[in-house]
Amino acid sequence: MKILRSLSNLFLDLAETLTIGLSIFLVVYLFFMQPHQVNGQSMVPNFHNADYVLTDKISYRFSQPERGQVVVFHAPPAAHCPTGTGCDFIKRVIGLPGEQLTVKDCHYYINGRLLPEPYIPRDFCTKRGKFTANGPITLGADEYFVSGDNRPYSSDSRAWGPIKPTAIVGRVFFVYWPMDRAGLLKQPSYPF
Image 1 (cartoon, rainbow, N blue to C red):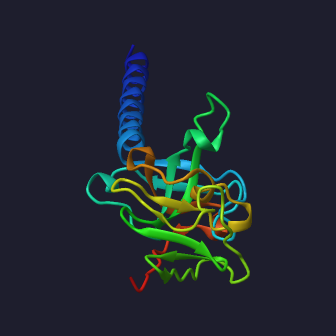
Image 2: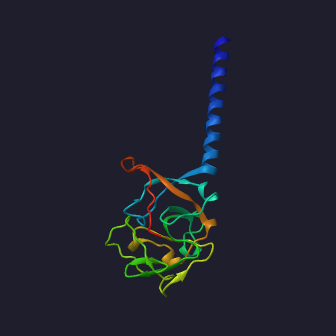
Image 3: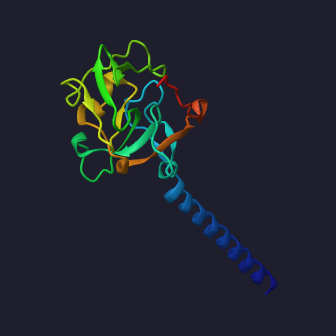
């Protein structure tokens, strides 16, 4: 009888611990951060196919995305993701609301000023896309222009236009796999 009581207490303690742990995990996953896997080559050399990252889902409730931050967002309809896949993209914020953006001479220009991008190789040429083909565009008050770091192989705002803040899942802040590249993301700085 004593052994049976000890086993039932052990089982109840284990069930309670698992329930509390699962509850904490669900709250963190649903409201604070979420893991994502990078699919494809659009963010090379900074992120590679099958990298795992953590996305902060709460900071954009208190602040706005900043230039240079890497975000995960729901793909816009113009990206033509397969129906029912829950297609999310990972890209870098280039243009902010109200800014004028131009693609010329293999670079981005923001309000007429060259955007320095030390996080991509110098030989990556930023070409115009369908959306940016006719010269400067001006972003609306609630629009962000996003771009992959691997400019020759990225489907991004150059092709299908800006994204709305409501589409943004969160800010990528940590790479946790593979372990040899694990760490916090560095926020680039810009002269403007």
